[in-house]
Image 1 (cartoon, one colour):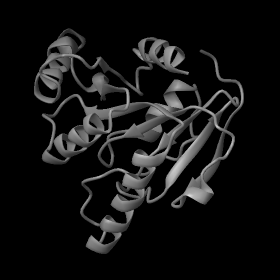
Image 2 (cartoon, one colour):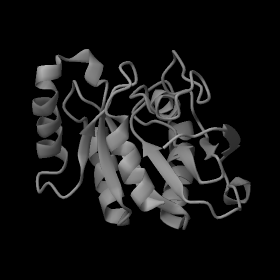
Image 3 (cartoon, rainbow, N blue to C red):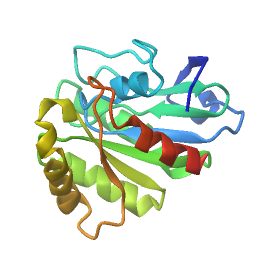
Length: 193
């Protein structure tokens, strides 16, 4: 899929700030610095539509990126970053939970993990939450460029075995650096929107 005119539309923390045009929403979840912004930029072949930060945990709002009025990529704040105060973590957690529980436009959750590492306890918590929500989900194992190509499949299988041992959720490798593997993700997005 070629996106010609993607744009950042709005940052929101309350429902009345969400876009009201009813477009389908593809939601990105994952821990801080797993590469959600880089994922968006790679998928649409742009360098910096989604702002990447050298400082993890910077995103503290829900960011909506309009993809040619076809759908939104929705970037949720990352979890597991300790510089956020406990109060801030609770506040952010509450508006994320509200969004995921109530937003009817969500048609897919893309759950990003780092291919190089076993899932963390926070990853397991978020995964359980997503599964209990009943929303369609895929797992994307990012940073596949950081390991040898010959080992990518084994690493993906390891993540699948830990997070989704019954294997009913698609798990795909991804690399923002090499810009490979994005076709498989686009095929899934096309099917859900």
